[in-house]
Image 1 (cartoon, rainbow, N blue to C red):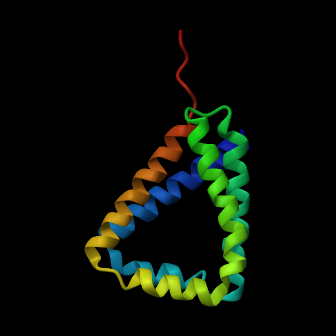
Image 2 (image 1 turned 135 degrees about the horizontal axis):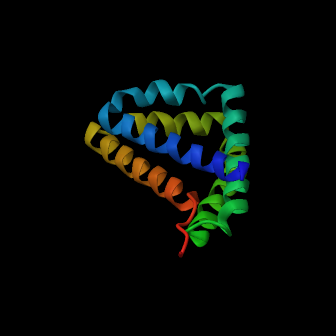
Length: 130
């Protein structure tokens, strides 16, 4: 039950973050800077790993078990890929991403908001059949 609340909270955070980027794309560099330090980098790695495992754990009782397993698996894999890319590689990716046009960033924000809403819906309790 706690795992479902954590994953649901993650979904809400993704939804809110996506909506914020869609509304004000220029806040993205400030957010990216939080993870472009050595400690922020390892926090991001650990966060991805834990949330990925929790998604995998709650998938069976969710409304979309396959999708949550896929998302959880991708998050765990990304937790192992990030150290291979390293902080310098992540910084280069962040600089490229923040340099995209506002239109692109707004659309990425909308996609993130929809993904967050989907995650939140997927882990919400199913309606009873009665």
